[in-house]
Amino acid sequence: MARADVTLERQVSARFAGQINEISVPLPAGELDASCRDEVRTRFLKAYTDLYGHAHDDIPVEVMTWRVVASGRLAEVAVERRSAGAGEDPVPKHTRPAYWIELGSFVDTPVYDRYPLVPGMTVAGPALVEERESTVLVAPGSTAVVDEYRNLVVTRTEAQL
Image 1 (cartoon, one colour):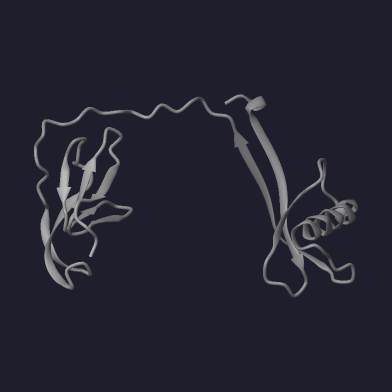
Image 2 (cartoon, rainbow, N blue to C red):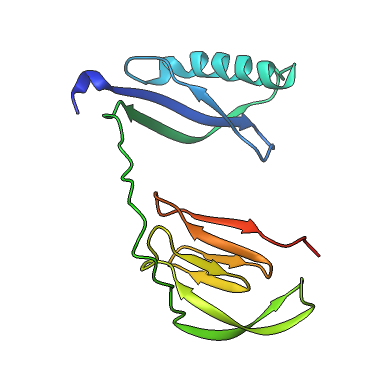
């Protein structure tokens, strides 16, 4: 990434003494030293007034966090599309009891591993689809279909109870 494609923004999170929440305030350009104190306070008072409609001139301002935010322009992202698989049905890795409010009870529920699922595969509910980051609940009367981007698209096929 070229330097011209990178933007740096310096900010502080500040609050009035005794308050719990802070607001972000952009810092002035250039070297920061004691002479910037009044400029930071002025910027904080303006941001506070813009947000809340008033500010307190007689309460000290506390700077809680100093931060530099770097952002850049990236090349266009191309999302890989995959065609549907051979039509094979996914195989659960095991079953476990899960409570389904729609059924009002615990049911031995098939548990699928998310990672081997390929486009075109369908999982009928009730089912659980596990991955490292989350678990997808496929409720009774619903189906989950893997689309060409490998998203799980869950659709209710029966009226919700």
